[in-house]
Length: 463
Ligand SMILES: Cc1cc2nc3c(=O)[nH]c(=O)nc-3n(C[C@H](O)[C@H](O)[C@H](O)COP(=O)(O)OP(=O)(O)OC[C@H]3O[C@@H](n4cnc5c(N)ncnc54)[C@H](O)[C@@H]3O)c2cc1C
Image (cartoon, rainbow, N blue to C red; front, side, top):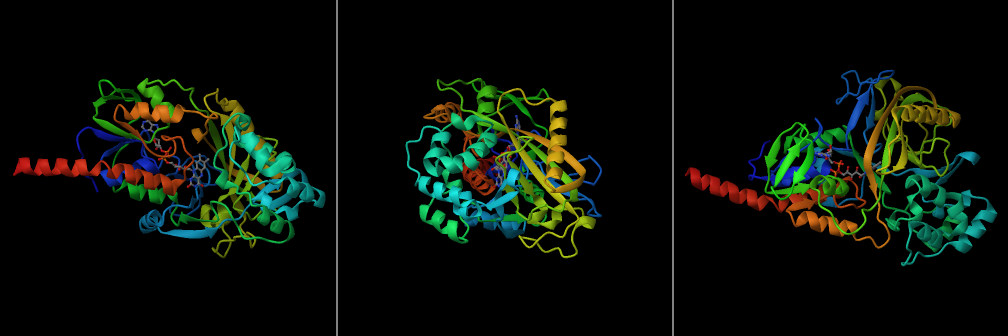
């Protein structure tokens, strides 16, 4: 469905946020790539091939992967979940995740602090003595970790994991997203003795039956998306967009879903505060023969790995539809902890890099991919690899310096020129798919009345 547009207002980026904004406003969405969804995009690769297919082949003989690694829809307003469900029917899953200590081949269910009974008794005693209810006033993430989880658990897991996850930045950046790993002393004591109920922000999650692509494509079908339009510069004084294909286009105002740092660069605007840091993520998707030790969890947090990755996820432990048809077990039911009888595994592996530094060379990336496959083979997770496929996500996780004013100053500077940042990367926040869609709808709807007014005027002129 194509909407009429109000002249001169545009949305930059056709990821989940931009698509939602496009649906609720009717404004044109300018997207650099030839497909919608941004980092929420599935693709397919046949065993022993390297070509990425946008659709599942008719014979079903392909691994389904995602550009940004496993993207599970957690949390979210019930109205947004209803919207997603209507457009792309979903299945619901109960999270099964753990911390994996490779040196001891030990799995401790997530979150670690609520399952201390899996650790040695002396570690449990020390950890319980040191656990504290987190307060405020921690300057850095490192201080927050020490102050919340105590020295023993920090040395065992929290520090080495955050070192990998933030590419070393955790010593300098402000604490962030404490809700992801809640500390509750009573629960920790309980969990030292017996099984406790699951906690955290993603206890259950949903995923579209036909893949995440189906959601993006169905949203795009209800918006006016213009593909292949990569913005390279924005003249905020002349109100002109410049594109990689050489075209320029006047605009009146913009909803931007592009990363805040890139918008500041493209507009040439500057603010006093020092720009906040970010991390890039190299996502390695692997399709392989299933190893005997391959776990049944949906994903694992890794505090130490030879190759430097911090998370390994198992797409097909969530749903067997991620496997080529002939590799699926007889029963297509989810395994969800009951053992996975598939003959293959579909895996994503994430490694973080400090954003803005020189990215790894193609040779380094290939060497890394080999090292990951060998490490996963060494852990008994996989046998022979049939597909190894990589994606570099330049701005993946956004962080802040302690007391930083950069984000608010940068957003104000853009808004002063009628450029409105919306979504996870544009507003420099931690946010999942459902909240990105909600914010896109919200931002887009504030442009909708202008569109309605323009249509009224247009109709009046015709009559
Ligand atoms: C490693 C990782 C794992 C994640 N896992 C989950 C998860 O399990 N569950 C969950 O809910 N969320 C997850 N997220 C978050 C989720 O990916 C985001 O909430 C969501 O993708 C944000 O969508 P967006 O549209 O704001 O941004 P994007 O998806 O980044 O979309 C931006 C769009 O802008 C386009 N673009 C970029 N530059 C230009 C330009 N110059 N000109 C024109 N277009 C341009 C891009 O091509 C893209 O389509 C994860 C994120 C990461 C990094």
